[in-house]
Length: 405
Image: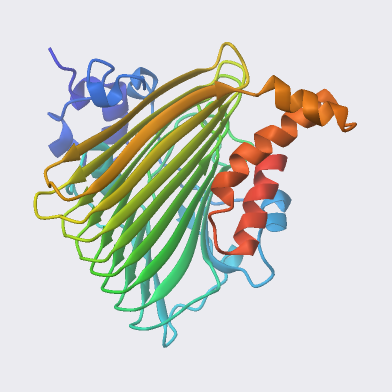
């Protein structure tokens, strides 16, 4: 018999906290018996006694300040609550509008965790860009979790709407700062009108006891260009679902990811890109570096509808194991219903090349430094895909200072 949401202490704690999750009671709870959750065990989350943090205290950590540019524009949220004193943005200009509100409460649509996010009724950041506006300065949405107590629940929502021909860069950061275990269930909805362009970067720095179950939706119209990059150091449980719908001819989606995992950390990335119209393009590159007993999961699915002729799609997952105890599960998939397409996919799993290490040693570089250089070169292939040099520098520093690579 399938386990239901109502059978979990997590559900009971949400009810006790006053969240309207009653309509979700009969929904199935994901278990490892399901193919989609085969390698990610949510039994710990099922037992979690979640609570909603009400207290907003703290400042922007020095480590975060050091990452941000001098012309920082964006919203800072502490434990899911926007903090005006730490944020810096104009609510409305002739090019962009930023609205902060509570997400509309209710069961909503989507899977169980999207519905929980909606039911929580927590902060929603909505960014709208006017027709033809080209905004080169990145807009930041920074989530800092410093809630006291086990099981703090944070359910933020980001909504980005780009009008015809507009361009925007968005950086969303999830940073656990000196906290116990928390539960993060965020949702991002990114919508691009005809000819719009979006660069969206997600950076995760969670403590090893956190649980993160997030979802990103991308909807692209004709001739739109969307670039999505996710960088994570994992968590006790880290699951990210990315769903892209390419709905217009000539549109392009680039999806890239980097798992940099140590210890017992876990990261599971599921992607699904659906080509609905002809002459569209998608490309994916996910790279994973694993040390100690870390575990990485990648499940990438490309779906090409029957009318989506002339589709060009590429998908690759590459994994670098630094320990014999690290584990990778990878499953790239193609589902093609058209006959005039060009689609490829693949996956590799390997270790650091000893010959390359030896070569660097002959040039006077110590073994550990040589190993580190090779690992960074492996990861930089993903980071270099960012057009903005400032963002590339931020991610490079983050990999070194917080992730240890």
